[in-house]
Image (cartoon, rainbow, N blue to C red; front, side, top):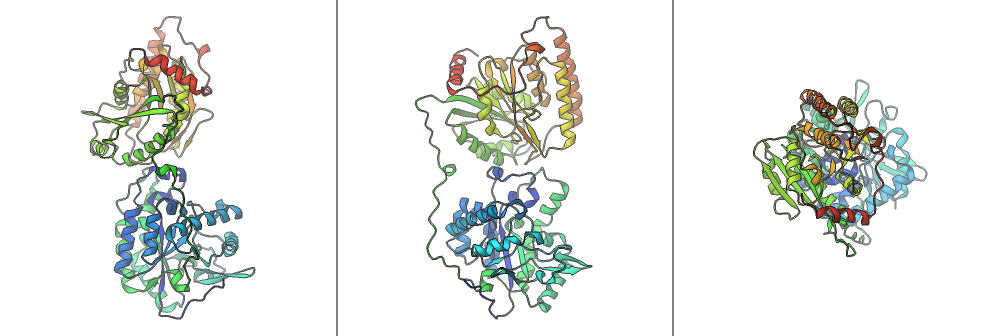
Length: 588
């Protein structure tokens, strides 16, 4: 297909919209993996409607760069954008940069994304913009792949700093010449300033740079430059009330959140003064599909799962989740637990107990709204804040199963790991605890100072208690109820989690570790008071050491008989069922 040339017409600038959710952006890439996207409360639909409403008011047709991942999960939304006359173009499938892909991987990503977008939107996809980081000079090989696959244009260059400074023509729309092809390139508009190139027409630059200066530069472009201005923004930039990612740094927070409440006002200024259209309209591209793309088969994750147990009853398991001032976190928790329920429900009859621990925000109301009425969920409320350990014990005592798991509401440990932790609770084992400091465990994005404090506490606990574990303070555990519920725990807050393990150790209980990854908290804020917790741990260690010194010389567990740091091999399903049948008949 030959590339068309722009038709002669009154000057119209080009408007592009990145259709992605607030948690999919490059600013949070280090903290949020694509495999975690499903956990977040989506605001994509309401933000897209706000964008469409803005464009309707100004009678503008734009190019929407969309992730294939979004097209597969929200096909009706992509079709709505296309039906309103806007162009659908590719932003890849996942939010990945060109530097992360080989040419073959890039080709596969383009094909997968285009198929998803054409299936959802019902129109040809002929444009591309890279999702993460702009093209560098060494990335221009990607143009060859785009041309080979029939794309008509790219918009992945943003002249910035000294990048492409020796090729000033790359600051405006141009045709990239390859071996036997020409591909249109529409770079993000930039100007020269004090020897550096600065993008002026979109996104973060709109929200960070002085408005009077930007307006002057864009007006100068409109009056003096024959090439159209290429403006862009993200759908999430019109949403000042989006959930805050608490794990972000102060610089990331400025980059992502500053002036969100004024973004629509900024855009209105330019929409009132200049004419805009889509890149496809500018090039005169024919977006009609020769034949429709077949609908994608419904994903199992969007259906009510069907579980086949082959006549073997599922193992009843309770999961206790303390909640204190977690109003912002609960949608994230709900999406995570939905996935856990689907993945574990073949083997386990899961019952969730959410303990509201005297919160001072809207946690209780949010719990009732999100989880109320769901048969697998029970909600228990403390009148007044009693602490995380007290909430855990309340949940354990209210559980009607012998296997009880506990986890944090912020999901800093992946609860899908319960599929591997529960089978470790074999006969003779009283607790399975998650261990990020295990040689096979790990941490991700947790501040170093917190790791140092936590690892130091574990080092000290190893000198006080019998069992030599790598981690003593994790809330993510699997318990045998009849052993735990009778323990007398004095500490009701974070310290109670360590005290529970310590007293079980001194009573001769058996504990195994499961290596896991600890991640930084994404939503909400930690309630732990650092200095109070440090001195509290020292006080608790002194009490545990005193209790150990008063024990008889013969103890069921000695240093020589402790379990290895390596987790026990997962038992067969039959062994676990045998364990449950043996324990469930015992009185608690």
